[in-house]
Image (cartoon, rainbow, N blue to C red):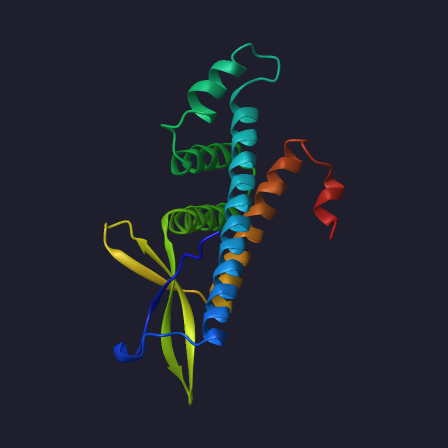
Length: 193
């Protein structure tokens, strides 16, 4: 399988990687592609929970309209994740399933994760050779097109990934809280570690 990565060098006259540097870039590339796959998998889980809750709130479980609802709303490619988040948010607000502060946090995290999903799904992983103290390191970046249509990049650091993990965990915890209130999960589920 071919290795795909981009590197921007500090010194254009030394654009050759020594074997150790090449191995490091390949290892980082594999790790980041693995992270990308896991992150997208987590977002799929979030979207499935949104779909389940939205259907449960809007369609009675014995309704013969489930197939129609799934075809035209849940599985319709024209209905975006942003729209699904907005619909569920309005339902949760109307039904008072979460405190206002919890709903604000849920919306903030879900919309941020949606943006992150788009960056990871369509972005390109690349590396820049950077001087850090006396050493030169290959720093990883995610290059993507922002919502204004311009190229942007995200520095891929431990704090970035920690923040991503926190947003996911916080959003999932609040969605699970709603699942429990809708009797999809037992109350004991909230206390499992």
